Image (tube, rainbow, N blue to C red):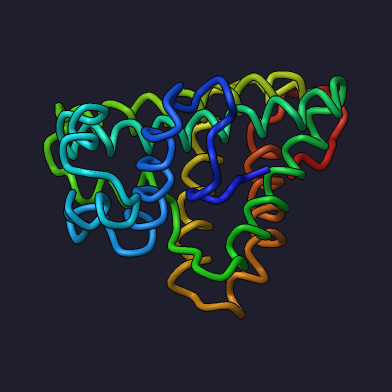
Length: 213
């Protein structure tokens, strides 16, 4: 349920131009593997095998390309969640469990470097920068999506619980990256256990206990 940060965006979120899509795919691989600041526009141009004129016709600045990449990653994550929710329309518990398992699987993938949104925020210190705006919007979506699922579980403060689950998600992404393959393998189980504790702490009196993650 957590697609790789280098995975293509859903068709409706990809550039209409095949050339722009090729540039975006090349940038995704380089930005995620090496870091945004470490990758110059010239490296992306070379990897995508386009001219500078073509590159700047589609992406006027490197920052515009970064925004496009993060927007594509966000679209892929929304589409993945929509697919799981469609498969379990009446089971928020299964959706949350699927998220934890998907994150665990992604953490074990070769080349995993953590959350691209956290990484981007670390590289762009200005909170008013367009890149940070994409990061903030994605985070608002994550909290809202989690709160919606948690409300279905009968929690008395689904938004507060969602904020806590997102913090757990952040920690799991970092642990999956810096902890090595051995730690990455335990990410899903750890996230399920910690998530269940958050849900239990926010459960409204009188509701039937359920395992949420």
